[in-house]
Length: 411
Image (cartoon, rainbow, N blue to C red; front, side):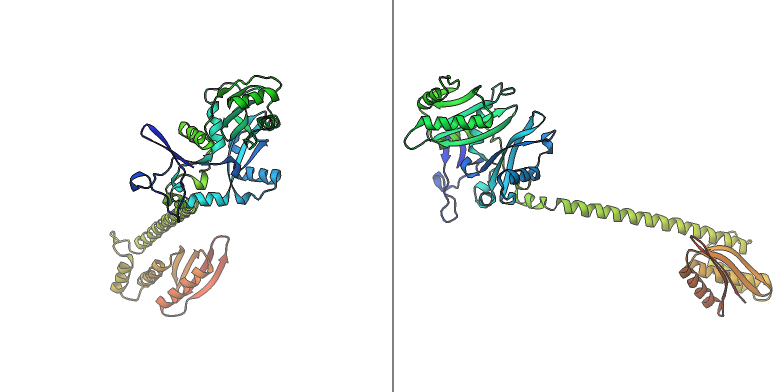
C-alpha cells in the first residue's frame, strides 16, 4: 500500500504489478516513487524486549537477534529487524519488529517500492500518531487504541517506549464484547492496569469498553463512523514520518550504487591504512639510506684529505686518488700507499664498512675495520682481491653483538 499527496487532494493507490510492470497513472505516466511503504502488522513478528543494559546505544541487531532466538526459538538469519528501545527501570525496554527476509527481498526488487525511503508498520504509524502532544505515561502505562471499520490497533506505552502492540480484526458476527475482552486482556498482559487511555473508538466499541471494564468511561475520542483500515493507514502516513523504519544499516534508503559501495568501505579503509604504513616504511628506509650515505661520504672525504693533503678540492675521490697514484709512479712507500688507498677507496664505494686502520709495513698492506655481518666481510674480501690482483688474506675475525671486526693483509 502506497500513499502520496498530489496538490491539495489526498490520493491512495493500491499498486498491483501486471507481468512485473507497475500500473500507470492518469495520462499514461508511471506512478512516482512513494514516500512510504507500510507493511501490515500481521505479517511481521513483534516482541517486547527487556535488556539489562545501561543505555539504548548498546542495543544492536546482534543482541536483539539473540534475544528473539531465546524468546521465540526463531532463526534470526531469516528475519530483518527494526526496533525502538529506551531506558526504563534500570534497563532498556521496548519492542522489536522482525520482517521476513523474503518480504525484504520482494520490496527491494519491486520497481516502485524499492525507491521508498521509509518502510514501516501500519500499526506503529497509527498508534504513534496519538502520542503527539500527550503528556503522561511516565509513571503508569498508557493504553493507546486506534480503531477502524475493520478492526483496531492497540498498544501499551510507558516512559518513552512501547511495551507491546497488537492488531485485532472485528469478528464477522459483530461480537464487539468478545473483541473488547481480548483487547483488555492483551493490554493488561502488556502492563496496563486500567489507567490512562488515548485513541478513538466508534459508538459500538465504546459501549463494549464500558461493559467489559465494569463501567469505566472511555476517555478517548468517539466517532460515529470509522474509515476503513486502508484509508486510516493513509491518513496516518500523510500526517507522520513513519516513526519506525526498516530501512537502516545495509538496507538504508540510498542510491543503489552508493549502497553497493558501502560494503567496500572497510576493505577500502584497510587498504588505505596498509598503503599509509607502506609509505611510512618507505620514507623511513629512504631517510636511513640518506643518513648512511652522508656518513660514507664524510668518511671518504676524511680518507681523501689524509691521503692527498695537498689537494683541497675533492671532485671525484676515486679518480683523484688513481691519478695521484699513477702520476707519482712506483717506488716509495708513500707512493705505494697512495695506490693501495685508491684501490681500497674503489672497493669502499661499492661496499662501505667502518675503517679502523690502513698501514703499509715491510711491503705488506694491513687493513683493519668492521662490517655488519660475515656476508659483507666476504664481499669486501672478494672485491679487494679482485682489485689488488692477487691473494688477500683474512687474518682474524671478531664476532661481536652488532658487527664483525676483521683484519686483512696483502702484499
